[in-house]
Amino acid sequence: MSKTRFDVTRLLRRDIAQLEPYPAPQPLEDFARDLGVSPRDVAKLDQNENPYGPSPRVADALARFDWYHVYPDPEHRVLRERLATYAGASIESVVVGNGSDELIELLFRLFVEPGDRIVSASPTFGYYATAAQVAGAEYVTVPRGPAFELEAAAIASAVNDRTKLILVASPNNPTGNATPIATIRELLELDVIVVVDEAYFEFCGQSAIGLLADPAVDNLVVLRTFSKWAGLAGLRLGYGIFPQALLSAVNAVKAPYSVNQAAEVAGLASIDDVDYLRSTIARILAERERLRDALVSTGLLRPYPSDANFLLCDVIDRIAADIQKHLAERAILVRRYSGPRLENCLRISVGRPEHTDRLIAALQELS
Ligand SMILES: *Cc1c(COP(=O)(O)O)cnc(C)c1O
Image 1 (cartoon, rainbow, N blue to C red):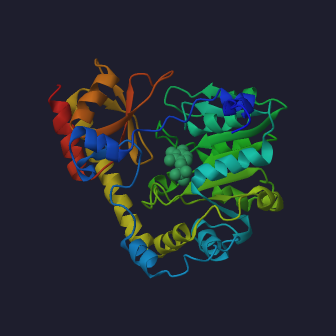
Image 2 (image 1 turned 90 degrees about the vertical axis):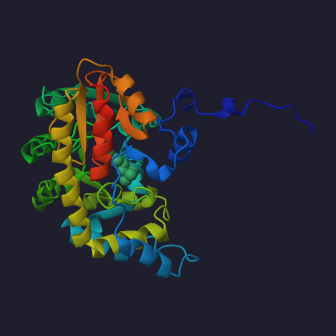
Image 3 (image 1 turned 120 degrees about the vertical axis):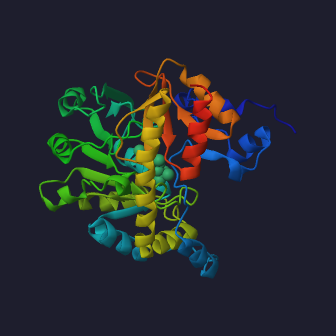
């Protein structure tokens, strides 16, 4: 080789070179191997996945489909039409993505230049901060109220003339509470894009999509995903309802084939089997209340109210990291946080009844 080697990292964008990767949990396979158990024996209560998995029709539809050698329809007309009916929106307003994470990234690509401001209410979903950093944006969070409620006035006071997006997860992750529609309406008065991330919509039933019936509402984007309620986290399928005025810009910047045929087939099979999926949601919601009571009875954890499929809990008189470790040694994964208001909290996804039983038995060893 004739030329001298150089450090490829010197070519990185300077702002990117300084970024920390988005904190990802250890892969389930590795965790299970280290513990000497099968991945199936891990109570995976750390990522709000659906413990019942997808509709059984998904596997059938994936097996029967025989067009995997052909690129997907870049306009995804069949899927978008079904999503439009499901969500109560027009087909033109539906944008599909490789998980809702891709749509968050798409919003940044559409709107955010270095130095622009993004506003959200903390604590909230960590990927917003990552996406803002990658875009070179200023990410400003205002603290939520005592019950983790989002305060429209606080958001409004953080909005300046460089602000492009307000990001609101409702129900919020990790706190579990939804933001009332009246509060969303107040945010829409501001001259910025209001993104309502409804990743947990199906567990709560309250949506901002109805606000789009008002023709004056032209700055609302609603994001949804199949990752949580439909048990498709591994296939990566999300969608958004975007203002129609943005559609040509969306089509100009979006990667055309980011949603693959398998995700499309699985999404369609899920919508065909909504009644089944609703029955698993009902089981999860019933289990959430049983889990809540059982956690309270241990005296170790104090759960906050939840409109979603997880419970954020204060750890009482103990250290959250110690409890997380104790549970992990018993093949039970829960999520822990750092940062204001969450430093001694655990977030526990609602699993199957047997997961609750194992979790409670493991906690009782400590109490
Ligand atoms: C899980 C989650 C997402 C990610 O959804 P994907 O479709 O899997 O990318 C987005 N927003 C919130 C608030 C979430 O909790």
